[in-house]
Structure formats: structure tokens, C-alpha cells
Picture 1 (cartoon, one colour):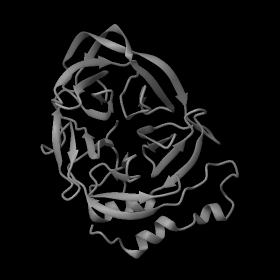
Picture 2 (picture 1 turned 60 degrees about the vertical axis):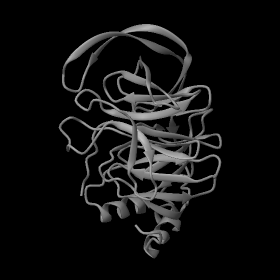
Picture 3 (picture 1 turned 30 degrees about the vertical axis):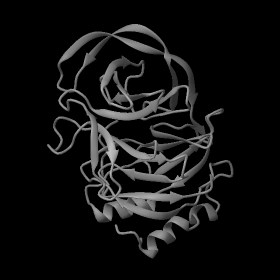
Picture 4 (picture 1 turned 45 degrees about the vertical axis):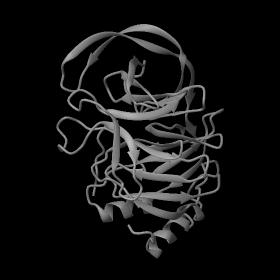
Length: 298
């Protein structure tokens, strides 16, 4: 996704942060939000963990009890930033890489595990990568019809992808056809390849009381609902996967402020990870110093 523009912990958080998480929205209480607007979902911070401030977070998920993170970078970015994915050590925040892309050519995006494979998107090169979920050896590449790759999750059957618009696309990785695609790499070199393209099974349009909701970013499926970061906002949206309606919003202003107070280069909120075994939910952001474990009504 585009590089964010930033305008200007230990276990126990400050009381002010906890109060901000639990507090009622005074604007809503004043009656200025329409009755049919998505309700604000209150949350509490349960615990905090360190996060690598060189990690430009694009994907964030649990798999078999391990936390995985994928990151992206442009070639012109700081040398320490990489396009990779790997496991996160919650005691240090550091990522142990499982696969890494050439940062001169690819800006890494979202990842997902499905049927023994890992799928990874890239931002503008219309190319995805497939890895073995145990060895992390590269198995192949694929292409997709959207102009950009952003976030990804799965319902156990489909690859569910966002592209920064108001649409969420469902692809069937078991149904493919070859497609010739011209790739413009991040270093401006080009190549023409014939890559498998997955069958588009469904397009879900995301809407709220004002119409289509754009900038849908990192995705997570939690107890039958899609949760999505909305780029350039401090919201996590709760989306009905049948209708596409936004049925709730987590307003994460307090966490964004806390992250930026701790590290001035912290950028946008991005990253939702749900462990279905323990019920743990973690959130973070691009270049944030902290991962927050949060709790809210599901």
C-alpha cells in the first residue's frame, strides 16, 4: 500500500491510555453521529509487547500458535527495512525471517496460510508468491487482476484479498488459469511472464451509512466477521461478510497516540492477529514500538 504520511512498554499501561480505550465517544453521546452509523466498539488493553520499529507492517496473523508478520519496503527506504515474512518473538518484537523478497523489485504485502501453503502479495507488481508452510521453500508465483495487493486472510476455502478500494475479493486457489502479465518492478525494470491466476469467486463491496468504504487494508476473520484496518484512519472495521456492511468500529486513537509518543516515526495503524485457540487478539502498526493485546465484545 502507499507509504503512510505521518502528520504531526512495559506490561502496565498508563491509566490515561486505559481510560481512553474504555471511554465513551463524547461526540456520539452528543448526538452528532447519525443513528445508522456503525456503533463504536469499546476495547481494553490486556497486555503490551515490544514491536520492531524497523518493521513496516503489512500482514499480521497467528498460525499454529506462532505470530507471523509480513513487511514491505521501497528500495529508497532505510537500509534496515526489508520485504519479508517470519515469526515474531513477543519477548523482543524481532522477526525471524522465513522468506525474503528482493527489496529492489518487490514491496511485500499481506500473507495467509491455507492448505499447507503460504501466500504472499506484493504491492504494485501484480505478483504473488507461494511457499510451503512447513519448509517455507518457494513453490511458485501467481498473479491477480487488481492493480495493487494489500491485505489478505482466509475463511478456510478462499484467499480473501483487499486492494485499497472498497472491495474485498475472494479467490479460489484450487481453480487456476494461465495469464500473461507485464510486470513493472519497483526498480522500473520490466518482464512479461505467464503466471497462474486464481478464479475470482466473489467480490464483497464494503459499505456503511455513507456508502462505499475505501482504503480497506489488513484483514482478519474473527468468529464469522471480517475485521479490517482502514488506511489513513485510526479505525478497525467490523464487516458482515454476507452483506459487506460495516457493523461496528474500533476507534484506536489512544493506541496511535501512545505509539507515536513512544516513537516519533511510528506511522499508521495496521495489523490484526487473532489466535482462534486462545482467543488472543493483537494489533500493531507500521514502525510501531508496541504490539497491543486487546479485548472487546466479539
